[in-house]
Amino acid sequence: MAISTKLMMRQGQALVMTPQLLQAIKLLQFSNLELSAFLHEELERNPLLEAVDANDFPDAPQEAHGDGAAAGEPGGESLGEPAEGDWARDSLAVDATQLAAELGTELGNAFELDAARSPADAAGALEGAGLSANSWTGAGGAPADGEAPNLEAYVAHQASLHDHLAEQLALACADPIDRLIGQAIIDAIDEIGYLREDVAEIAARLDADPARVAAVLATVQRFDPSGVGARDLSECLAIQLRERDRLDPAMQIFISNLPLLAKRDFVQLARLCGVDDEDIADMAAEVRRLDPKPGRAFGGAPLQPLVADVIVRPASDGSWIVELNSDALPRVLVNHSYAAQVSAGAKRDGDKTFISSCLQNANWLTKSLEQRSRTILKVASEIVRLQDAFLAKGVEHLRPLNLRTIADAIGMHESTVSRVTSNKYMMTPRGIFELKYFFSASIATTSGGEAHSAEAVRYKIKQMIDKESPLDVLSDDAIVARLKEVDIDIARRTVAKYRDSLRIPSSVDRRRAKQSQLRETAQPAL
Image (cartoon, rainbow, N blue to C red; front, side, top):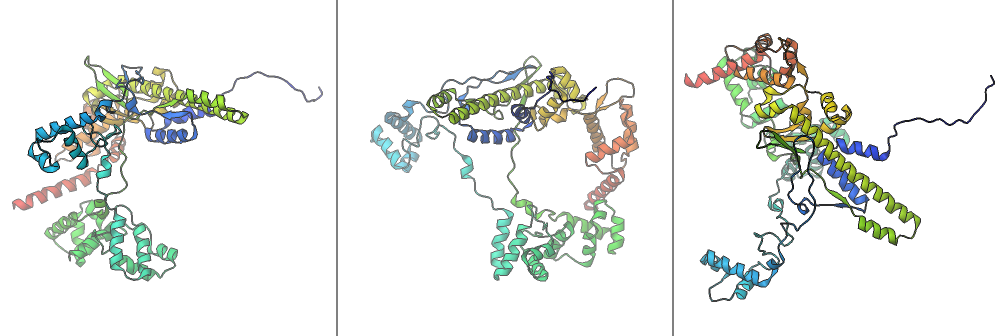
C-alpha cells in the first residue's frame, strides 16, 4: 500500500476551556474580598456594568430549607433617603421649636433661643449656629445624602511602631549619617519589635562601617518600648532586664537557656546558674513579667473583619434556615438601555464590536455570579443537612464527611465542591466556621458502628487533657485506653499527632508545668 497524503473529515467531542468557562471557575473559588476586587476591575473596564447598592433592594431575605434561595427585587425608595418635605423651611422650624421646648434652657443657652421668637426665627438661629437645611433633617439627624455618617473619620490616628521609633531617632541622633543608618534599622524592625535583618547586611547595603551600624543599633535598642530592636527573644529579655538593673551573671545564664525554661526543667537551670530552687523560682517569675513582643502595643496592619458567606439560623419548626449573606453578595447589573443607546449612535464597526463584546461579557458575568450564589447555597444547605447534630449539640457530634458525599448528593463534581468550600465561611449559632471545617476524616469504632469524626475525637482528647489532675497526667497510651472505653478505636501515634496539632505538650512537659504551678501556688501560703 502506497503512502500518500489525504484530507479527511472526522467528527469528535472534546472539552474546550473557553475564557468564559475559565472565568466562571475562577469566580467560584474566589473569596468575597477577592470577588469584590475582581468586580471593581470589571466595573472600570466594562462601561455597561453598574454596581447596585444593597440599600436599593428591599429587605427580602434569601432563605433556603435545603436547596434554594429567594433573591430580592429592586423597587421602592431607599429608607435612608429623606422625604421631600424634610427639606422644607417650615419643617425645619417646627423641629427647632419642638427641640427648644423639650430641652428648655439648655438649648436656649446654646443657640440663644427664647419663646418670643417665631418658628422661622428659631430656624434662622439654628442656621446661625451651624445647623442649616443642609445639616438638619427630619430623619434622625442623618446627613443630606441619606447615608450614615462615617465614624472612622472621627477615630484618632494610631501611631505605628516605625513612626514612634523615628520620632525618637530624630532626637537621639544628630549626625545625618547616623540618622540614615538608624532609619534603615527601623525599617528592618517588624511589627512585634524584632530586627529581622543582619547588621552586616544593613552595613553592606548602606556601604557603612559594621561597627557604626552596631553602635546605632545599640542606640535604637534603648528606645521605647523596652526591648525593641532585639534580634532574638533572649536579647529582647536581656534589654528589658538591663534597663531594670536585673541582668546579673546568673540571670544572663538563665535567659540564655530559654528552652530549659520552656520545658520547666528547673533542676538543670539551677545547676547551670549556681543558685537554689527559690532563686530559680524568683528568676522565672521575673522573666514572666517581661514583654516578649514589645511592638505589639502599637498594633500592626489593620485586620480585615471576617464576613460570612452563608448564614444559618434555627427555624421555628426545629429545622435550619440557610441563607446567603447579602453583605457579602455583590450586586452588578447590565445597563441594557445604555447599551442600546450607544449601539444606535455607533457608526464605526470597531465601536459596534466593542459594545457587543462588552454586552456579552457583562451578561456572562451576571449569569456566572448568579450561578455562583446558587452553587454556594446548594453546597451549604447539604452540609447543614448532614451536620445537623453538630449545630444542635456541639463538636462532639460532628460527623465524618468528604467531598464525594456532598458532590453525589447535589449532582456535581468533587472539584466543584472543593472550589465552593475554599475561602467560604458559614455563620452558625455556634460561631463562624470555614466550610472546609465540616469535612473531616473518619475514626473507626471498636464495635463496628458508625464512625467518629476526626475533629470530634480531637475535641475529646483536648477535654481529657484539660480535666486531668496535676497528680495524674495522662500519657498518650492512657488517652488511647480511655477513648476505647467510649467506642473509639485509635492508635497511639494518631493521638500524638492530634495532640501536636492542638499545640498540647507531651505528658512529661505537662507534668512539670503543673507541678511548677502547684509549687508557685503553695509558696504564698507558706
